[in-house]
View 1 (cartoon, helix red, strand yellow):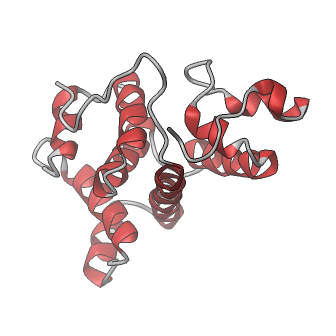
View 2 (cartoon, rainbow, N blue to C red):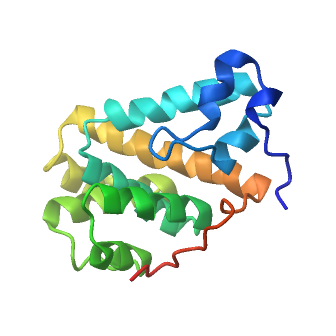
View 3 (cartoon, rainbow, N blue to C red):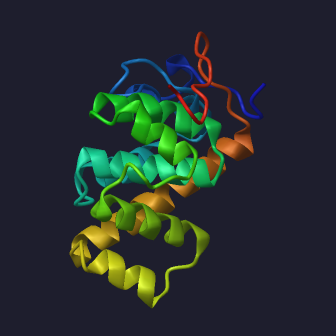
Length: 180
């Protein structure tokens, strides 16, 4: 059982109701329903996360590689599960997803490896000159900001998910770190 209740649309002011639903899945998600206990925070968080999707300088594939790598690093099952579905939707195959789950960079190309390593270094607080220079050789400054913000943003979201001990939505089972 989650540590905070999952609010329903009737529990929040009208202007926040749509924020409880996934724009991709079209149904309420526990992550948003739990944060909906403070609708203003939910609105700000959804705006921030939305900017990571649209303004980070990352392609859909790159964004999902970052999010999956961060979810695996922080062992956040809920976030991993949600983004396995999203990653598949943007064309990332299960071999790549499973490799990220096993912390294997084999199926990634050089740019993707640098991307994932930079994101993980951000989360670990271990960005040094070598890691930065490797990423900076492949991505411009605007995109480096996007990578760092996406990694940090999804690490923070994972912290909220863990604090509230969120469960997967009814009718779903954890894909596992190797979803094949």
